[in-house]
Image (cartoon, rainbow, N blue to C red; front, side, top):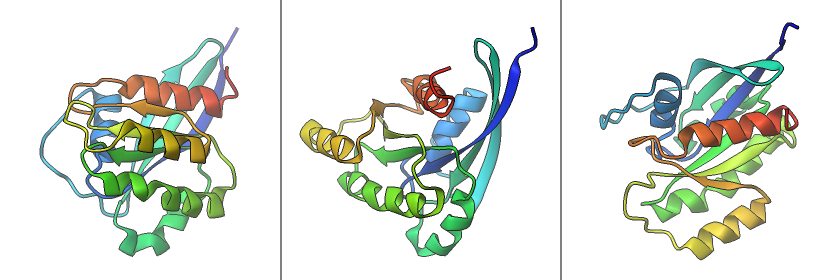
Length: 169
């Protein structure tokens, strides 16, 4: 029996330099570079997942993290089926900005599945676990720890979001 095929748009959101581009590169290409590459606009990368009876093509939109360009963000959010909200464990202000990113996203997409991603888990964290739990609870979502550098949790975060988008397929 032929697999059902779906195409879903995934948005990666969060402040600049939290590791969104590195997460995409680790997930899709299984590579990492310490070089900081600022995203201008949005970069779209494709990843095909073979699930039980489904072939899921994820169009991953790596959206620039500079809020000065927020007028562009609504254009990039349009049509998103899911999102990873990424913050940097070494920079507390990036976690504090997450609710604003989510509010901006929801204004365009309504309620879509999303996961909170605590990136740079390979480094010394500067954010108390209690604060992360508070934000995760406030947003009513799952939080996952990732490291684009060593790959920890990256596949799992994208897989969890995929399952949420597909209704648990």
